[in-house]
Length: 94
Image (cartoon, rainbow, N blue to C red):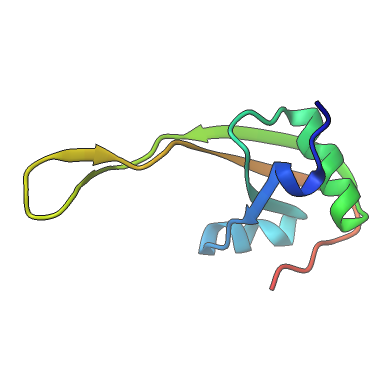
């Protein structure tokens, strides 16, 4: 099954740290949990018309949270984060 670029890239991660990466031509995206590095790189190249140099990925564990007034603990879902380094071009994240 071929995945669309819109299926792989979920959203940009906009934090102070990720904004600091932009000066080094690195951008951070939330991606599907089952996406691979090659798929992520191709999706970014297709969506933003840039040349990707490298892709680093990490799986972030969901936080344990208490729901309601009870002491029952639940978990938020795990998610995957990709740090994309560009060799040429830039991405405008608004």
